Length: 164
Image: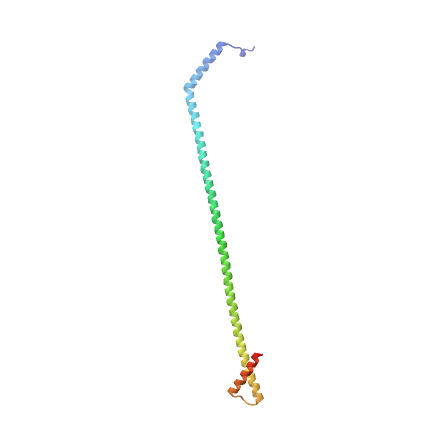
């Protein structure tokens, strides 16, 4: 058998004594600083986790608040758009109504102008017809008519022409 596999009780005892001294020295001088370091690391990790949880909760609340603000802004935007459409439609209807009023005014004005020109034409035609009738009557009768005769004859012919 190889030498390193052989069991020697003295070597085991000295190994146990050395190990015990090593453990005692570690326990006396190194255990407390290692334990404090591990506890500090554990508390730092725990603090980091709680800080991350708080930051996550805060981020979630900010995200929710942002979503609510976006939703509110979208609703406000839609309300503004609807109001704009209503105002645009009202303006279109108002413009159409004003255009209709102007059109009716122009039509009425045109009709009045046509009636006025028609009356002027009728008056001019009557004057022309009356002068022609007087001239023709004078030629037929060979003399000048006096005021009453002239008026009676002219009115008769003009009325007769109006009926035709």
